Length: 563
Image (cartoon, rainbow, N blue to C red; front, side, top):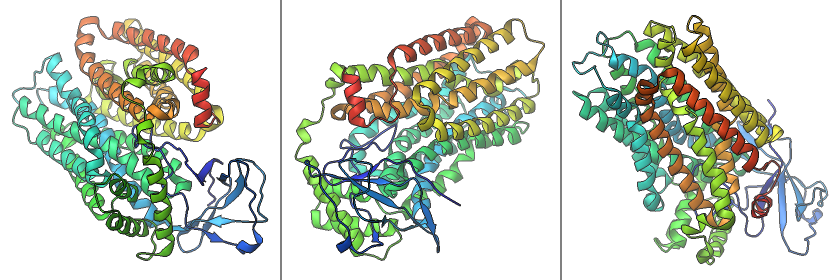
């Protein structure tokens, strides 16, 4: 099997900036290890490098990689000076070798946090049907009001919003590994409390606790993955984390379809998250801390530099599948430590909180915040959380039919997410956003028309939901957060992304909570008509305000926003 990588800067001798996650990132956005483990296929004495006037060398991944025997991977790197495309050394090739086992586990266990987030969305779709059924709920309090149902559905999102607020000031104290371990405990407790609840009040507490786990996991997972994986596959792994969220949604749909006819089936739907949380917690316990976090604590004066440097070397050796304390890991840690020391001498130049609302940063926040806001208020959380209920009211009278169609929707969502990941760098951000949002508006108008005049054609509801999911997954789903990670100036990027996360979770919770009461007030036809109108407004917003960033460096994007 061949592998490929987009040609982009891997590391720079000097200060380098990169973004690690669409959702969260450290205050100083840098390449983690500036000097990868390398094997030089030609003698160094025969390799020459000519430095440009600024004295900076840039190294680029070649578009073709190769797999080595014995379960290891090597990436060929072509060297050029000052960003030039021409090779300067004579046949100089550098390779970072790592074992796949050392890459897979530090990705999979944090990514389970995303899977459990998605699972909550998928499971809630079937759980709402089971919980409200006099025959299937297994409770005496099944007759929930629209407001009570809204609290059940959106309870985890309120918890996620609270968790994202709480974790911001303590994230660097906890570290990525401990943050994810705590998230797994919260996931497990929330699932068990919800599954065993004797009444509505305890159920809501369980939903809130589970949501706290979401908030911590969505912050810690992308940071741990970005800080521990090899540079040449970092972007791929972070993108694949979105697929784990979709896989979680699909798993929730599957579990719902199997448990929908069981008395108290909603308890099983929520409770199954606990074993997965246990696997996540044990997996994170078995992994080393992030080497970069260890160095950050040392540079910030929170620990002995020598002690934490040794711990970082040990952690990196484990993550790369190398012998303990090997010289290559030691060299990488030394270089990274020097880079962090240099970066922290300029700490005061970092943008303040209020600077996000000034000048180019304000323009960036309008673009990024606007995208994640429209991502939610076009009905996305409602369509996912209430997919089963929508299909049931649209003609699939049996709960089993509705949940099985939800599984089909989940599979389609998975396929379209894969398409978006593969094509975003080829087609660009704006074309996918414009085309996808246009399809979202059309699907919402079709749902409205179904409730108004097409009630005899239940396939229209299925087709509209598939169209909505497909268009969302090639537009708002992945691209909103990609744009958020690119659009903010370096000075305010951390604060800007933090505000975008709060905007996302806050609007998600509000829309999910308001869906059921608004549906009772306006009726399904008018509610989806409202969402369709908002989608048209978001389309105008994208056409007028959102720039194309494909192929631009972060500095180029900042310059474009400043104009």
